[in-house]
Length: 600
Image 1 (tube, rainbow, N blue to C red):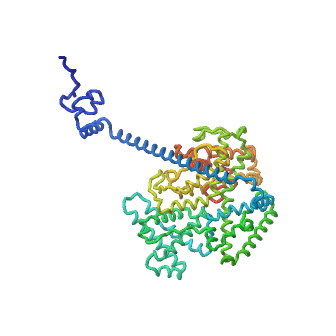
Image 2: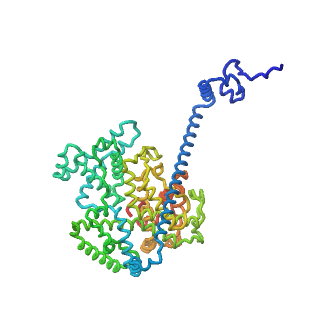
Image 3: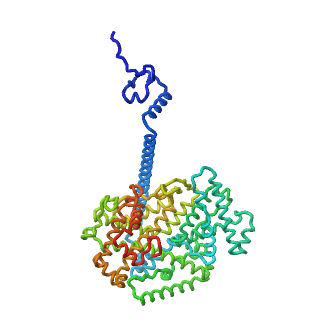
């Protein structure tokens, strides 16, 4: 009977095999003794062997790599989920749009109906057509137009801004500290309410005396809701104001909506924003929005391409319409002269907001359409970009880049056109008591990560509309919301207030080129010698902006920049940060440019 082959044994004889020996092939891994070793003992053997084989630096390096992989996988997962949500929303909008078109198809009897006759009559008269379109849009827009503040409310607004300026709310609350967060929030809210009460006493002793007569803050719930609503309303009407105070305001109101905090405070600090539509509904005066004169009384007088006499004539017509509307509605439904003026002033504020924020997008679209041809590259002014060239992270041919820029400008225009609506929806998401947040380090400090379902749905609608308008879509349509790029609705709104701050200085500079050059003969010689004239200089600026303001740059990875909806704005920011290195930067300065974040 032949003997079984001798099994490999540990060089030390009876000592148990270590993982290091097994890895070096010195021990047969099928050894009976190894097979019978208990699991806990094997784990001990493995950990001991790894500590023998790897230094502390190697272990730290492996841990860092594992952490980086986890973050990468998490980003990819979030990106895929966002893409899936976006596609689902766009599919829903497409189905809804198709259903509405089927319902709206005219039948054989439609031509004889009064509605069709009225539509034909309106179409024949150009002036009436404009009024009709304005009326139908105004009724819907008025739901998201904040009511302008009265003189008395502006006095109280100063108290709110003063209290917020001295407060250290976010510094005390949004910190990495375990336990006691609810108590910190409660203490800070009481402190701000106390400051407001003290300021009111100093400002208006009689009103302050009535306020402090109550022992508890909860007895003055209506007053505090009113004061904080003033700050929110004023900020929407003036996005460039309260740039630090509004962040504290919206975050403290967000915390006050938590159930635990409301139980401690025994009242709520939040109430709905006062809009033009809500105000007229309370007065039972909604038919005022259908008055054809209201459009003429609140419209913006565009001065471009008009003589002084034309502008004066249009201003007189607007003033007459304004006075007629005011005389018509004073006393109707209890409307005072101040009430009528507030309504018209609020609508006019919205119209001027659109002029100074949306119209720069229209101007840049016109520059792109008239000065560049997607089918033909003009020598020296090609829009083509390549990955790694000039910091670009995208590779597009001339035609592709033309279409990419065109769709981005249309998207920004549509966002700014509905910006008040988006702001209202952002506050709904932020102040929803059932929509909590979590505090996370996003790479730019601690931020509040919160889902924004209302904004997400509205952005899907806007993207779908922009896609229908241009007829194509290039790049990603992912909207970052509730992640490290755009943590919450407040950051989203703050991002898109920058669009006009980027485009307006460029438009102003390009508009004033001939005017400035004509005033300074030396500058004319410089422009002619360096750029070949004002028109060539304008083309140089536009070509550079359309190429490198939309090249996916601005971050070190495709999750933070690239062709996604927010990455397009990141690229434009990056171009703005480098303008001081451009050869045409002195021309910008001579036309009055100071910065992309100043007064234009």
